[in-house]
Amino acid sequence: MERFKIANHISELEFAENNIAVADVNGKKICVARFREQYFAFAYQCPHAGGILAEGHIDATGNVVCPVHRYKFSIINGYNSSGEGFFLKRWPVEIREDGVFLNLSF
Image 1: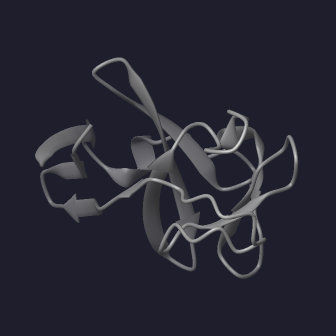
Image 2: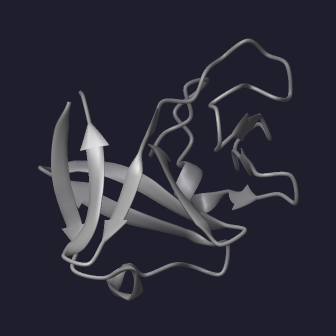
């Protein structure tokens, strides 16, 4: 697993009204969500049909809802909570004094 710095401070990430920001890591887009004072990183595209998850929203229980077919995925564990059998790729977010990091394996 490789660590990538995505910002010097969490305030540098541009969170939309849906509490999702998009980070660029070596040309790969990653979603970063803010939920209940915690941060979660996950795939930019839905594993079902490739919908852009940054255009979806985070529901009250911590699921990202895909804007295409409304499939739901837990940003905490990646589980497909709407039951279609897919899994959302996630990565740990580490917030330190020297920056915001993602631990990624592609």
